[in-house]
Image (cartoon, rainbow, N blue to C red; front, side):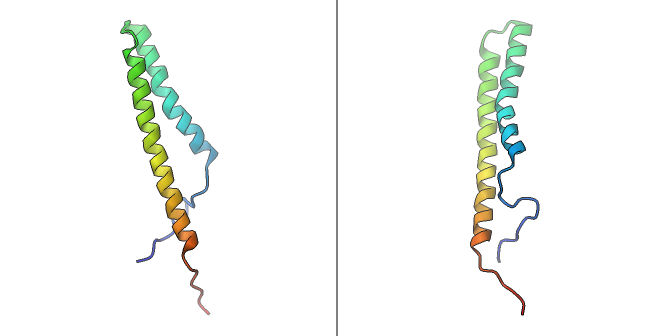
Length: 83
């Protein structure tokens, strides 16, 4: 069965998605810094936020790469024209 194209996801790079990737890393760190300063917990909330941000960003990059791969497969498939 051929892979069906997804009209909303053509594999192109979306600048807002890339900006969101940076926010995925920064937001947990900022939240960790706020928790650390509010409850005086030392560096552990910041380190936890860093770890969670990196895990989230890696997961997002993997989804992005899978979408790119799907788009490349669709581009390489021969076109079938009805005549």
